[in-house]
Image (tube, helix red, strand yellow):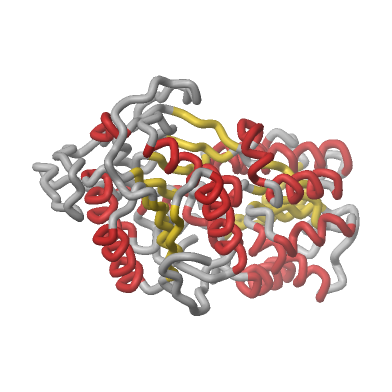
Length: 400
């Protein structure tokens, strides 16, 4: 892989990503319950950048949420930045999931004639900041970034925008284009799917466990959405436990489920993130209580969860997000930015319900062929707003 690549083993993986709300939501990146509040406001907009000829004072951007119009791919182009044809990816982990995003960015960059550089911080915030500084000093047209320490990253992200670069971020501001998820909508879709199964397959009778992640502020909306969806199953649906396990791990889900089963041995529906629910499945299996007519569903499209769904057992669904396609979009938008073209201010994930071998096959095929899937990206993303290099003072400075 070309560029400034470092190695090492990070702690982040697919199971952690949307716990921050990328999805919002996304969504966790360890230590990031602060996303909803983070923005840059220095009063003057006078941060100094890397010395680009296109550097200008940009103020504080858009600091309050606003209704954004649908993005128009055919919007008029404007002034072109005089920047290196180079895109940087400030990665935080070399887990395979993140390397899939890396390969997707690199693929799009190559297709559009951009140099691609990356560095991996191994979940070390100080190292991440140092790597971003290096990118800015070298000169870039676009910075792709995922949150690690959002407060520390934010000033550098603003410097990049002032210097003329596109900042393409997952969840966190300030950014010219921010990838998010409507967490209430994600949770509600999961809850409604569970309610449908309860009504159609369980005669409207269910003892439900919901695993929340309320320590992450933005995921409280997902929690409420799931509860509202579950309630549509009617009065026979009883939530016997609604808790956050002690750790965002499968072991955390396993331990929490073991405790729940002691008081509620007749649980037949479990809903939450894939990591928790996979741990819960292990606990049910260890207790001899896992049955094919149960309903377990998670969020994240975890590979292990998809393998369980294929088996046709208790694990019925996972709601996935198109992260490789996000990476490909970032590479495309970096090239568009250099051409003075507009890019969306917000890319909102559409959660995809994977509940059968057929839906899993399609999703995996699409993620393995992102260049082709990009032609029909509306299935996976809702793109909103519009921003170009020349009007980059309209950057998003709130968690969209």
